[in-house]
Length: 294
Image (cartoon, rainbow, N blue to C red; front, top):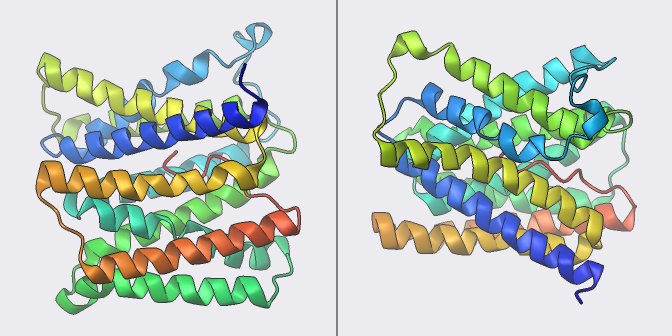
C-alpha cells in the first residue's frame, strides 16, 4: 500500500508525462490552424474535469458570485495559451520548455506589485539569475530579431497574472469550477476562428487533436491531486523532468539538438525557480498548482 507522499509523487510523474505528451502533440499539429487546436484543447479538456464536479453541482456548476474575476482569468489564460501553442509549433521544444520555467520569476514580481508581498534578498537574487538564464536562452532570437522567442515569455507573464487570479479565486471557488470555465472559454474562442479556415482532420489526426485536450485536462488535475496528497516541496522538483522529455522528443522526432547555451540558460532558470519555490515554502506562501499550460 502506497503512502500519501508516494501517491503524490506518482501523480506528479503522470502529470509531467501528460504535459510532455501534450507539448509533443501541439508541436505535431502544425498542419492545423491555431484556433482549431485551441478548440480541441478546450472541448476535450472538459472531459477529465467533468468527473471532478460533485454530483449535486452538475446542474448548477456554472453558478458563481465572482464572474468578473473568472472572466479576467480566462482572457489572460487564453492569451498565454495562444502564445505557447504558437511557440511550440515554431521553436525547438527544449527552448520553449526551458523558457516556460521562467513563470515563477514573473509571479514573484507581480506578487510584490499586486499582493504587496515582501520579497527578501534570496528571491531577488533568484529573479536576477533567472532573467540572465532567459537572456542566454533567447540570444539567437535577439540576434536574428526572431520575435517568436518572446512568445514563451508572454506565456510566462500571462501565467503569472493567472496565478495571482487563481490565488484570489481559490479562496471561495473550487478548482474544478476555475478549470471548467477556462476550458469552455478556450472552446468558444476556438470556434470563432472557423471562418478563418479549419482543416478537416482524418481519423488519425482527429484522435491526436482530441488527445491534446484530454492530456492537458488530465495533467492539470493530476498536478492538483499531487499537491493535495504530498508535501509540495517533495513533488515539485519532478516538474523539471519535462525538460528531459523535451530534449528526448525533440531529438528523436525533429532532430533538434539543444545548444550548450540553451542548456546553461535552462539550468539558470531552473535554479532560480527552484530557489524561489523553496523560499515560498519557507514563508508558507505556496504557489497554486495549475500554472503550467492550463
